[in-house]
Length: 338
Image (cartoon, rainbow, N blue to C red; front, side):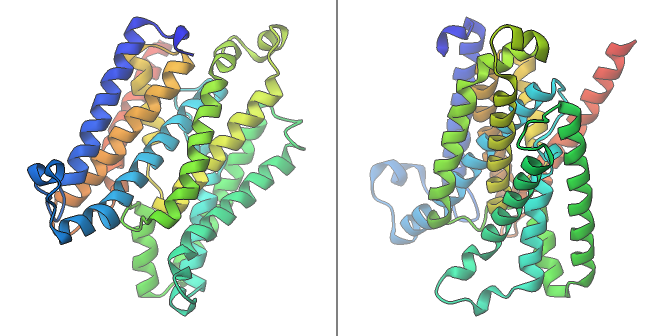
């Protein structure tokens, strides 16, 4: 796959990798409780520092890495599929579907009544089930992806988003004050509920999904010529569409189920990567994963340290970055029309 990369793209990936490593390192040692740099590498951590590193900050950074990579690659894949730089993983309705499941669990179910540690898994499981229902609806409404025209899939996503938004609005209206605080904070996004038990299955699915999409990168490059031309060149267009939509939906659904809604990462990251070194999808997927990691880990660090000891929702930090950039994209596209 590396043979498809230019020197500029390879250099950009190295820079993205270094930025991601720096963000992960800073996110590991800084926060409400700082871990001294010398003791981290000297093997002389105190008991409290070891506990924070292994059971609190380690899972949190790992979740931020997984979510950043998943949202970045999903955004790049859907932008390539729709041939639209303003496309976002939320377009196909999976984010809103997962959010509806999580909000339903918060309002109707009481995690404290469940035995053992099952209460910790209640909201993620509800979100995953709900996002799976959305994926099933997409599959059914497209007749098993036999009808997979881009416009048709996009319209289905808009309709599912609207239905989920209505459901979330109704549940918000009937929730109690304590439930409202919980679901509002969850809707803004946070990595604070991460645990190793939840992360391991998610890690397997997201890593497999990312590498599968990278293996289909050249096919997406050819599909930029148009679906008819791609078909004539031997690309199984419907199969590629099914892979991109299913894997993107699955990765986004899992990400939302674990962290809440983290806005604009899937929109901003692929476009930044594209502006830096081109539109080759092999480079674009790898770069979006690495830069997505940098942004989500950096946003998490900012949320933990900006008003310490209190904590800002991560979604506020990513939206603060993404909203102005989205306006910049719209103005740039509008300018190019004239």
